[in-house]
Image 1 (spheres, rainbow, N blue to C red):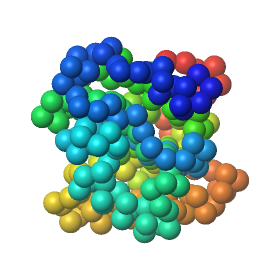
Image 2: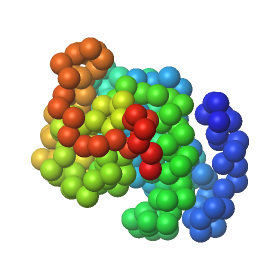
Image 3: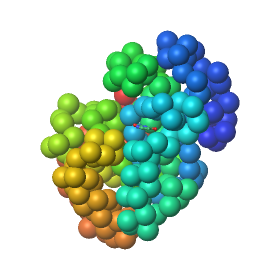
Image 4: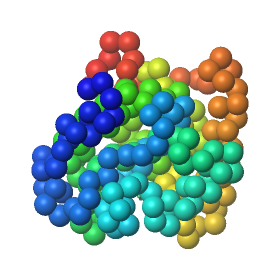
Length: 204
Ligand code: URA
């Protein structure tokens, strides 16, 4: 696939997994096609399922505030999820759904080719970094996955009613701001995890 539009067309009216039966809208992803920052969440919730756009509910409002805190607007980044369709009742994504859906996310990552990937919460972090480590351990640390810098942070939904997590999220976004300001030739963070995307020779 050469463009995000081609990829979206290829996915079509997807019924590759059972979520195709229960969703309203498929939520492909939004934002700048050549963004420096790609944000990866878990799966569409109710509002996203109705609108066909990621992070348009309360967690999305907090995400917009986090971006604004480092001078970024939503349309300057690219936002996508591990799953493109809402799991009924917002249950956790299942292994088979992740396996079926994430090849498209990998293509989105390859096409956008961001400098930094911000993973929101456990599902996105575990997928991108191929780790079982919990977000509580990894958050706020700069990791490497192939040629990408990866910053795991709490999922904004988990911080909506938790003041402490909310403060930590703002701290971690400040780190994202610092990382971007330092530029690609800034001080190299220690690579901690092995790669998932686009590294030399490694495939999944
Ligand atoms: N939570 C997510 O992980 N993704 C969305 O798009 C909305 C809420």
